[in-house]
Image (cartoon, rainbow, N blue to C red; front, side, top):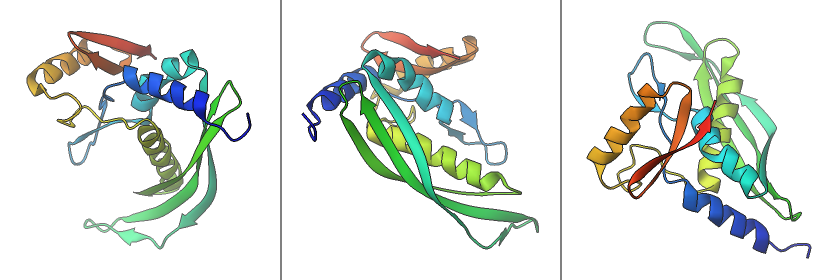
Length: 174
C-alpha cells in the first residue's frame, strides 16, 4: 500500500539488531585521534542491507563554498557545506528519506568531497542509530571491547565488526 512504512521499518529493525558498533579505522595524522571512515559504516551495513532488501542512496542538492580560512601556520583552508538527502529503499517499494548536511575545510578542492563523505557516513549512522567503538554505552565492558577491537589489526582488510554477547562477528571484507 503506497505511503506505508511497515516493511521497511521491520527491515531496519532487523539490520539494527545485528550492528552494535562501528569501528574506527581512520586516524588523524595531525591530531592523532581515531575516527570512523565511510568504509567502516558501509562495511558494517552493506551485507545486512542486502540481506534485508534495503538500499541506501544519497543525493547532494546544494553545495555552498565559504570564504577561505587561514591556518595558524599561514596556510589556507577552503570551507564547504553540502546539503542533500539520504533515501532508504526497500524491495517492497517503501522508502524513507531524511535531510543530510556535511561540512569540511580542506586545502585545494578536497573540501567538497570531504563534506559529502561526512554527510554520507553520518546519515547512515543516524538512519540506523549506530554508535562508534569509543561510545561507552555501545559496549559497556570497555576492556573486552578494546581487546576485541584490537583484533582488527591482525585481520587486514576487515574494517567493521558487530559485537554480540560472547563473540566477535566480522561483517564485511573489503
